[in-house]
Length: 177
Image 1 (cartoon, rainbow, N blue to C red):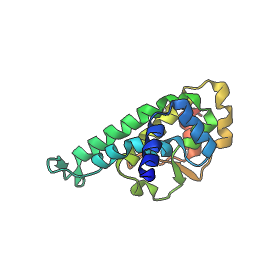
Image 2 (cartoon, rainbow, N blue to C red):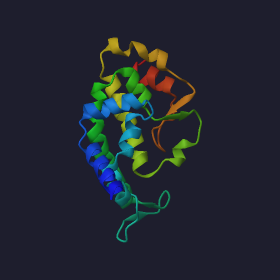
Image 3 (spheres, rainbow, N blue to C red):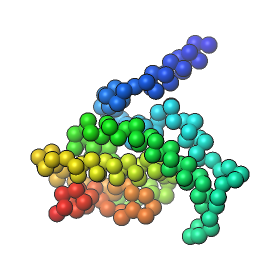
């Protein structure tokens, strides 16, 4: 019984956090990026589970490969809702925090194929949102970017992404050099 009460309390507390409380939690742990954090929030677990399953009336396509289009739409909708709830936090983060929140992996690694479902859309679309937020910042805040450049890390942009390194994204897409 105590375990049930404890679990219910944890779920209620995590669902009622303000964006500032969630950001403080992320900063204090130093372990999870904002995108990783939203993927672990209990309030989304049911929606993620429902989205990431095949249903009898789903629409499928066979070109260019067999895929469940209905499932992809459900996954994207859940990821979009998750990102809407953290978008305000991006504005409260400094440029260094934003860059460190990007989903990256070793350049020429094979991580792209190992990410799927809601997680895929959270990372792909979340990275784009983070890049857009950095680009919207005043030039004075962008001075730290060259220090954060890394040509050994690739920014996750999904299966059809450019495969750019963090250094390329910073130099060409953000600083327009």
